[in-house]
Amino acid sequence: MNIPLQIIQLDEIEISQHVDLDPNDHCFYWRKYTTKKGYAFGETNQLIKNFGIPVTATHRLSHKQKAIEQIAKEFTQIATKDSTYQDYTFIPIPTSKGRYNPDYDDRLLKLLNRISELKKIKMDIRELIIQPSSTQQAHTRSPKKRLAIAELCDIYIVQNDLLNPPPKKIIIFDDVLTKGSHFKAMESILRKHYPNVPISGLFIARSIYPDLLDENT
Image (tube, rainbow, N blue to C red; front, top):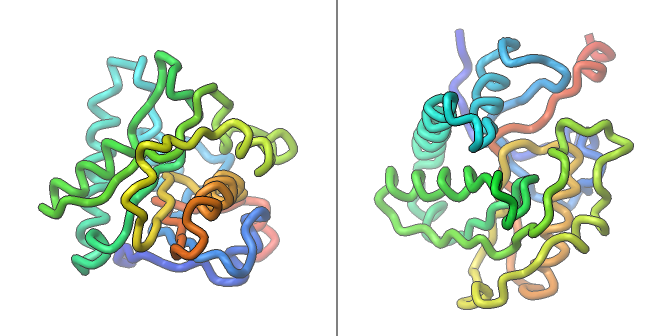
């Protein structure tokens, strides 16, 4: 029997598996993505891979759109309180393809906007931080080659015209939580502008590492 999806806060053990996070971070997810496994490994792997289909793969974009629709419906079914949509400013983490790259993928913005449409509530969605240059996707890099928090901070640019009005609460939103470096970089930058605003992370899925699973079996 399938367990109903729910939004889960990372506990101490889970936080320790995402090495750039610390115990004070408030991060949430509702699916688990298994690394080093292919498209057919399970529903979440298939969903995340479809969600990440490159915008240039025009023959597969119908699968990408179906993934956006499924994820949006999941979220509205799981997060039932209107306050979730009204009290938070949702800020997507920039995708690996830079803002000015012809392959730039605004899937997170499309997803958040679709959630707003389905919920029929005007959400505060801001692409407040952008990444002008492209980088390799975090989950395709070996751990040693992933960008450090400081490197990401140097790459990210704040869109100052979107800073106001100040948010009441912030959700940093991304598809997959790996090390947590992108979240920490975003948090670091946002703290400079909003030192007293609560900041949380929300991810469609967190990465599960087969090596760790093997050790625990």
